[in-house]
Length: 321
Image (tube, rainbow, N blue to C red; front, side):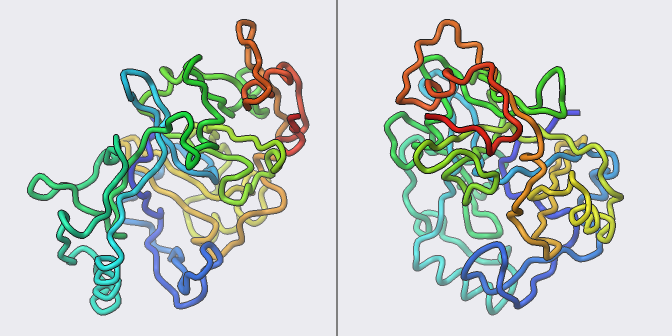
């Protein structure tokens, strides 16, 4: 079954409700978005019961597509409204409660985007102009250029000269183990991935350290969930709380029609990150096949090349110097 590309915000698999309580997911957010026990109607129509369930990995979303005629890594960059427009939008939401009816002036209400910015696939258009989503953002991407400090952690996981990316995935001969390997960017074209590591989202997997940071790419849909509970609120709550495989940020379902649905621990009022995660319960080996590579110890790839063929009990145990 094909695994969907994450271009847009993914809906929760259950109908959600907003509660006026401080969020445990985002600081300064004075409300929670919680899952009800009602399955989302769109999930039902997309045959969610036969969908492929995968682990939702906690990182920042990336995309591989061409730039300057070559396969490039792109970072998520949403076009956001100006302060004035955002204030008007929030005031409308507070009084009306429905973002769909808000009248945007697309030409004037949004900030200028960087050079080479492209909209995400599926962005709505009205009268030939890009139109924001329900959060008032226009999802999009910018290419990760060498030397751009804003995306230095993205850059560390790729090498454009070799045309490769550092990827974390299940080991081919033993899917219960992990491997860090090199994948040609050309083999990742039009895929979305998650960048995880030391300086991403508080590093929930404990990868690397501040002195020697480690950042890796994980293609979306990489880690299959084999023994998922029944698709109902109570069963999934129990799965997250009591199963080793449930020590994850969330679940993403990939439906046969390309639809994606998710369930985050926070949708169930459960804590994340955890001290121990399912991803960190697996042994991991490094297999780079760098016979033609002259390791530059100033780069992440060069430091990994010194550890080629080594194995570790967990991701947390990998230390590069």
